[in-house]
Length: 101
Image (tube, rainbow, N blue to C red; front, side, top):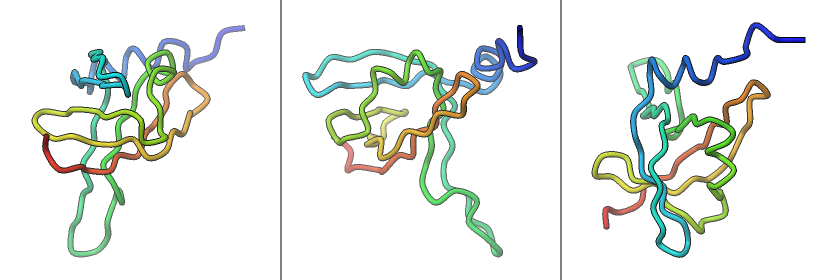
């Protein structure tokens, strides 16, 4: 039986995604499409504690959250700190900013 969420990851990535570069522990690179969010701070609250990256589950399988890989967004390097699958085909990574290489 199909779900109303079937195909949602592709639609969200197409609408809001950008290309980021994933670098594994061996230095191999791979470009993936993801939705990148920076912490948003206003006078009242912090929306996100850390930057996040949402990717398709298929792309998340190749990303480790154990400190053995890096993600390049623009000219900033991030380390994925936790992987949280949403059950609908997307995985969210919390990202820790690293010094630029």
